Amino acid sequence: MRAIGVTEFGGPDKLEVVDLPEPHAGRGEVRVRVHAATVNPTDTGLRAGLRAQALQQAGLRPPYVPGMELAGEIDEVGDGAPWLPGEQVMAITLPVSPHGGAYAEEVVVPAAQVTRVPAGTDLVHAATVPMNGLTALLALDALGLRAGQTVAVTGAAGALGGYLVQLATTQGLRVVADASERDEELVRSLGADHVVRRGPDVAARIRDIAPDGVPGLVDASVQLAEVVPAIADGGTLAVVRGWDGEPGRGIRLHRVMVMTAAGRTDWLDALRRYVEDGVLTPRVARTFPAEQAPDAHRLLEAGGTRGRLVLTF
Ligand SMILES: NC(=O)c1ccc[n+]([C@@H]2O[C@H](COP(=O)([O-])OP(=O)(O)OC[C@H]3O[C@@H](n4cnc5c(N)ncnc54)[C@H](OP(=O)(O)O)[C@@H]3O)[C@@H](O)[C@H]2O)c1
Image (cartoon, rainbow, N blue to C red; front, top):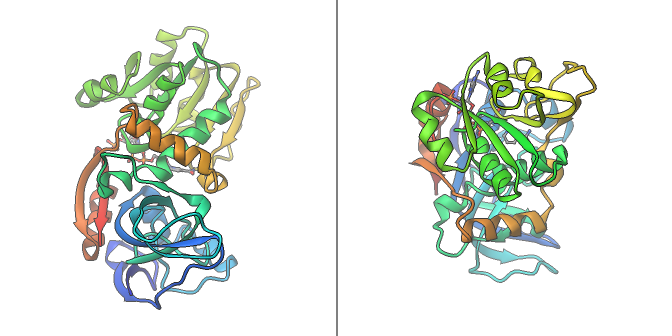
């Protein structure tokens, strides 16, 4: 079967079409005939070698296949997996696992990592939901805020940030989000109560809205120390790329890692319903035939993409 992988780490041109043995669904697993796989920042990291140690420690051998979410049609069902061939699903996939990533014609995933495609949503848009949706739910869960409290979201125009704004709003939180001038309307349309100008002084802008600081902040723009002053004493900072820093002032640091929520079928089902109810909006910037993955990686790394880039098989 055709997949997109790297045998050597490096730039986008290291992504190549590879021929891999057809996988088969084991007990509790399904095989998905992939139609769409999204391109995320973590994929460019895997390609560049940032996950080399984890891949080796997992005993995996090249070619390594990136990709953390997909949508397609089930075409093989392992014993005990509650699915039927032909059902359209979306799933989170883990490239640092024996199943490999989503950039492949056929991907086997544990049934717990799968949910139905939202009614009325095509496979390309559905593919953008599982990984970033679970990340957003995980980050908000880590903050532990109650309805009516305020959350700040940076990187709000991005794929993860947009889901954070929408899901926080749905949970009854008051949302302060950042945006450049050109993204302000977009971020407001996602439900942010207050939009502040993005940039290195974003914390001061958030304090203008919340003078005592916010009780929770999700740093989807990965500004780390720059955002800490926005948080109230004893509040919570959720970071999405790890951080060795120390926020101080009794602020709790939570390092979000979506793989810890990969088996949260209940959350995947909730995300499906949010899309069906129109409170979560999958955004697609552009699709590429899978063999053009190097172009998609170049575009993502250039920055400024609004909505997800999606590879089609
Ligand atoms: N830990 C996990 O489990 C997990 C899961 C999912 C995602 N993530 C991480 O979450 C981050 C966001 O992912 P994404 O898919 O949403 O990326 P994205 O779509 O590229 O969004 C990132 C947003 O942040 C903005 N931004 C970047 N640097 C900034 C800065 N210095 N100041 C202000 N804004 C800045 C970007 O603007 P421009 O486009 O204009 O640069 C963009 O709007 C990535 O680092 C990703 O790896 C982690």
